[in-house]
Length: 87
Image 1 (cartoon, rainbow, N blue to C red):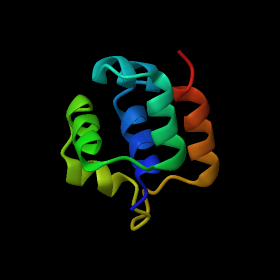
Image 2: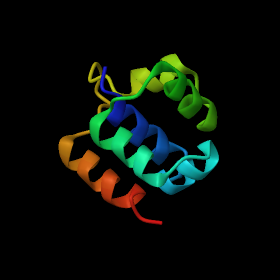
Image 3: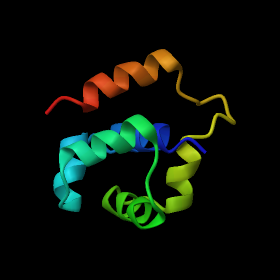
Image 4: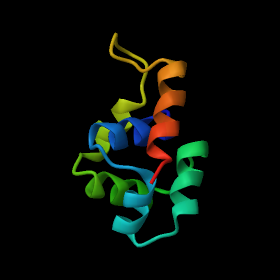
């Protein structure tokens, strides 16, 4: 399970950024940034992120798995981080 990748992909698909997610959850941008760097968060926050992004928790988790041909490359993920980090 790669939650940092899951969050980044979900944000990209929703055409949102970390700032939007932080505002939506009523938390600091730094907290969301930490989640996107480390992938570490508790279950309650994982559920809140999924709800904010209008996606099931199981689907959010699955986005971070490298099990199919649609997986995101490291280069693509780096580019995505740059894009969603902008406000």
